[in-house]
Length: 243
Ligand code: SF4
Ligand code: SF4
Image (cartoon, rainbow, N blue to C red; front, side):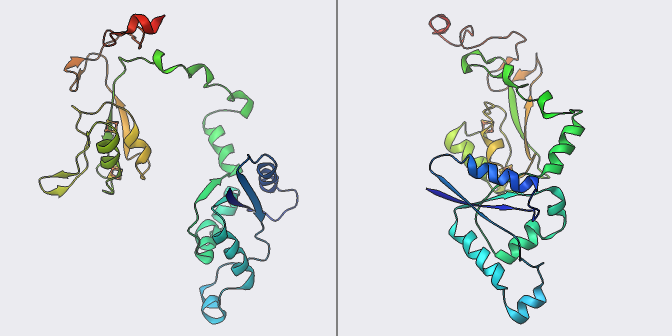
């Protein structure tokens, strides 16, 4: 049973954040136990007070509950984050290492929708559904290669391990005796795995090859023709697959 501790970033009884948290509790799936805690009585972080008097009792109590849980579910608005003590000071105080499951900033959702020119959530709900298809109808002639931004890379090596062990051994770990992570285009099959494991946002991107450009892996130019698993000549069972 996964024990999750949910904390609302607001003290108001009618806060949307608290309502969202209550909804999460009401809808929790089997095998999960969401308990709630409040930030009421948690003082602003003050290193001097801590040095002089130790950690306040209200903080110790909440800290203990966090330590006893498997994960945190934080529901707070952007305003609460920008006050500066959530999450940085707040969690510095609590000294927690538990994974934070989710952050639901009301304000940011509104901003993202505004940037996209979307007036209401109803305008976008379900919009991606027509793009979902059975894997066998994906275009096999679509080619994309991973690309690593060397300025952003922190050389953690996760992409190399993921590609080496699970995909196509297409990422270097050492070049000329120096730790260096770079995609070997002639090996990359565009599986996207490295993007999923990289901890740095936008450090690895998938770059599509334009029609006519030589794919170094196959030695053939990218075809403009849509061909899926039921039609592509590479599949000797295409006819059977189509049936
Ligand atoms: S996309 Fe796949 S094959 Fe290409 S480098 Fe990343 S993990 Fe390796
Ligand atoms: S996972 Fe990302 S940050 Fe880490 S070595 Fe690979 S590209 Fe660099």
